Structures are given as structure tokens and as C-alpha cells.
Length: 456
Image (cartoon, rainbow, N blue to C red; front, side, top):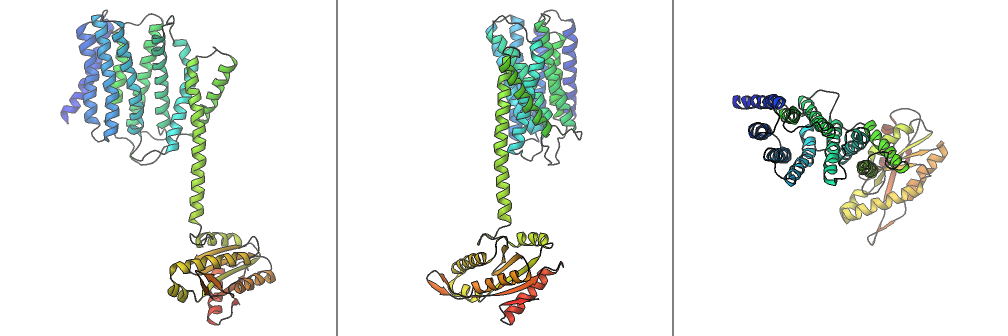
């Protein structure tokens, strides 16, 4: 443990040394620019391996690959500058630097979020904000800092792609941060990402004005940023298992400004940098995908809620749904009916559960046809049903008698003729809360005394 703390302190000292030598160094040299400078990302790579021991394998792999590619790019860039190698080797260095971004993009959400997996919508929301903000920021900030490359497409590509990637990285980490509470890992990592983007923009600005010098103190800005990013790994992340959804306002702003930018590009070609077309279109496309996913999830939730309140056998509302409607029914003129089949158990025992299930479905269909429109019929469990009927006493009692009569003629089930009866408990809605209890008493009285329909 003490060795690790000493190593962390040593990495700070190495960065400070590169900063000091960078202020006085006029020409690239072997000791300072190749050995000392690249010792920092190498040390950070080793330290990150220890800091990430508690993380899952994918998180460790993606983060360390990001850091490794940046280190490899730095080594090749230093070799090119110190030994004046060809420009082709410098292009390899730029490509390796670029590989830092896709791996850090994948690693950051895993480093910030708890072990709870993000939902599809959360991932899409984060991507919408990242791309939308990158398009807007590119339009506002990048045009002033882009140098003139006299038609060199490769240099122009790298001059554009790095700032765009930085802006996406900033937008991504902003969209994932829970700003309502301070978490040291998030805070330090966010600061490190901002510092990394600032280093890119500062050196790009210097290059544009012809003031950039390899090995100067501005190169140490990247090392400071990487040091902060790795230092954040030593701090605990949020383990509250609470999701941090992207704020809807950020999503709305990203989509709105992406549409505005595309409109400006169509109306005034050349007014804005053409490379913002990609992220702007991607933002709108992801917004469309999000709408489709959200609608499908809403339908699935609606279907799940319907199933949760529906009897699987008969398709009627279940007891849960019936009791919820009974609360609303308390202010309606009408009657509550409880129905219990007579002789169902012997039939179920004699012919089996399959025939019993078919009989229940057939009974429910007859009951449904016998009720007036806008009535509620539910299977409460077993061979017990409930009904809520609106209307005056005469009409509701007539419906109760019709329900009783509907079960009086035989059912043809599986080649068998089956006779069954029903006992109906009937209570009018008088505004009291014991309607179910009174209807239950009336139903059992009708069954005991063979009354058919009993009113209490």
C-alpha cells in the first residue's frame, strides 16, 4: 500500500519535471522528450492496472487499451521529433492517439455508473446529448481554431477529428454525472476530461498561429489531464445502485439545435463547418430511435399492466381490477353482484381440469352477453364472479335475474352435456363501504337456501 502511494506521488513528480524542463527546452532531445515525458503515461498505465483491480474485466481492458494507445502514440511522436523520422511515422502516431477515444468512450460510463446496468433509453439519451452538444459546440467553437492546411486532407482530418472527439467526450461525461451530489471519482474524472480537451484546443490554437513547439510546457497539459483521469480511479464510485437519467432538457436542447444547425447548413451552405452534418444527423436519427423504443416500451408496460389486471383463463378483469373499479363505483347508482357456481367442484373432479376450464370460459361468455353495456364483469377466483351494474333497482335486479337464468340451460363441453347453476348475491349501492361483505353474505344465503338471487 505504501509503495502504491509512493508511486502515485512519483507520477506527480514526473509530470512536474516535464513541465519544468518544457519551459526551458528549445529543441527536442532524447532525455526529456523521449524518456522523461513518456515515463509518465507508462507509469500511469501501471498504476491504473492496480487501481482497477476491483472493476470488471471489460472496464479494465477498455480503459487500459485507451491509455496504452495514447502512450504508444506519444512514443512514436517523440521518436519522430527527436530523430527527425518521416512524416508517415507521425501519421501512425496520430492514428494511435485517435484510438484513445473509442476505448475511453466505452470505459467512462462503466467507471461512473454503479453496477446496475443502464437501460436502452439511458444509453440512447446519453448518446443524443453527446452528439447534439458536439454538433453545437463544433459550430460555435471549432471554426475559429481550425488552422489552414492548404488542402492537405489528412492533416485537416486530424485537425477536425480530435476536437470533435473531445467535445463528444465532454458531452458524454456531463450527461452521465449526478450533479445533485458530489462523488470524488466523478468530480476528478470530469476535471481530467476537461483538462484533456483543453490541452488539445490549446495546442491546436498554437499550431494555427505557428507558435506550437514540440516538447514545450503545453505538451505537459496532456500529462496533467491523464494524471487526473488515473487518479480518479483510486476513489470510490457511486455504489448507491440509483440510476441517473439524462435530464430531458439536455435531450431537448440537443435535438433542437441539431435541427437548427442542419437548417442553417441547407439555407446557407458554407456558413458553418461541414463536418457538423454527421453528428447533427446522428442526433436526430437517435432521437427518432428513442421515440420508437419509448413507444414500444410504453406499449409493453401497458400490456403488462393489462395482464396484471386480467384473468388469464377467461380474459375477464381479475379481483385486483374489480376492487379498483369498485372504489370508483361507490359514487354511481347501481348494484354489486357476487356470483358463485353451483356444483362446479363435482364436475371439475369428474371430467378433469381441462373440461372445468372450458366450462368457466363458457360461463363467462354467457354472463358477459347477459349483462347490459358499460357493466363490469370479473372473475374473482375459482368459480366466483363479480359484476358492477349501473342503473336503478329494477334494471339491476333484472340483470341479476338474467345472469341467474343464463346458467340454467346446459353447456356442451368436450362432447358432454353439463348442467350447472349459479347463486347470486345482490346489494344496491347505498354509499357504504361494506358492499362486498353484504354481497358475500347475500350470495351464501342464496346458495344455502337455493334462492337463485338474494338481496340484502
